[in-house]
Image (spheres, rainbow, N blue to C red):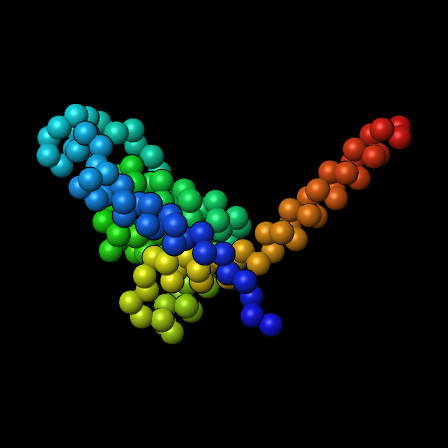
Length: 139
């Protein structure tokens, strides 16, 4: 049975590409000296990923890339430098069998590897919450 992989990376990638196109650029372009200079942006740490909540992590990466105007060719290498624990171990094995990894390919692989239990985890948390509420109301 083939796993259903979310295609949410594709719209994000397209949206970020559109933001960087000349017709969609904001009036503030730090590289041209207009508006707020790049060095005036608040310092934000790149999000780390340990294998939990991959969709949220991917969204946070996309926001970071957009804010700091990171070129798309650097997205995968930037993101993989911030993998920890099981995610870092998984990527070490993954990169040996995959060359020239695009952001879309990377996102799909991450969601397939680490996102399969999102629904199950959310359901388990909901059941635990319901049980704890039931215990409190029966006291």
